[in-house]
Image 1: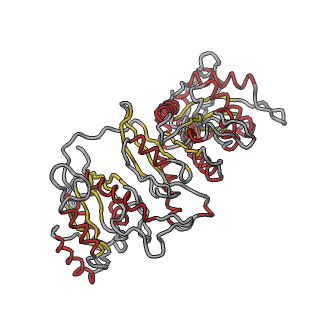
Image 2: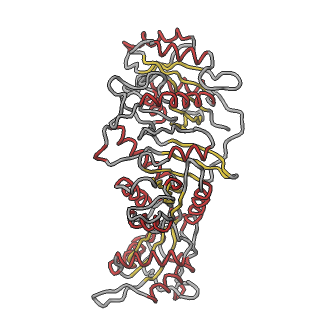
Length: 524
């Protein structure tokens, strides 16, 4: 069944983001007393628990929106470089209207401690007259949520909000959890059902990361074909990680627009630390990362820090050089024309942790090479999903080691007894060896380069794990596999010599310490 949509609206700083986090049971949206923290739409799909334990949970997509009306607090109209934040008001209100257009239920948040303000009255009037967004068909039902109802002394103030004409308000406090259960039970009961066709699962999830003003939001809007996220010359406009779903050339994609980051020592408040956390989460749940580099500025420490985040995540990544159309006809500091070859050498020198990642030149604003970047992202995802059979992998490992084996000052030969790919996304290769210490960092890097040349993982991260044969055999014996030994693998067939097959090995001992789902990929 299609998931119903709930939009949370209200003036700034009435607790909309706190309400979203309360319902979702996790910190999805940034919460801070500064007005205007939420600027784009922030959505999450949650499962509402039924009042009756025997009932079935109801899924719902809940969208938090920016505060409607006065956007900035006294003394905080301008950011740290003097940009006028009030110029974002029109864009924020456009995003609010877009959320209302597609909502099946609207939660109108009002601070019961502050009482009814002129802004609240104006928003209520627009909801009644359908002046928020351009909705087709009948209006979505509206329910007032009396936020900040921290205890019994605020209940009378909360019920005054029934004067809006949207029925009795739902009382709740995100701070003290007062009336939390009652509010969730009521929300479960009034949640409407959707009757349109369900949305298909997306074919690819893209995390778009980069420093401030690299063009991330412009790229998302170009891909979506509409102003889905706010684009502004003001640095740091995007705060949360924004999910945007769209169709492109018959393929469904979810782009995750993230906050533009700067050096940690330049962070002005807790909001920027939250934004960094959201970017890390976005990378973790993406299939492929687009690391945007601003061609008009030099590669900075922030770009390098973001590259390190991507490397640590083991996610496929495309290094996207945005705004290329603005620099391709210029000259560098030595007076030479800027060419793709020279710029690639520059990127490789500055981002040394991503030597395998492809580089793409693009202009998000002009639409130059955007489709090619998406095609490349799909190709990287396909590489990351590849599986190599155990026989093929063992033959490749044998050839690599015979051509150039690890050097050992003690004169003991380093051996590889068995190799297997135990999972995908990213490809994880486990090698059972006589002693992992014989395989130095330099030799592991050599192995990685050889794997990229010989296996279908040329442009994606590879996880390599070395396991001691003695360790595996010891744990196998402890699990009832006493006497089981690993032997060398035949170079031609990939079979275990002496007919000891992989299934003879205690699988739990072989996989111990690997991810929980590794056993599902164990190739017999």
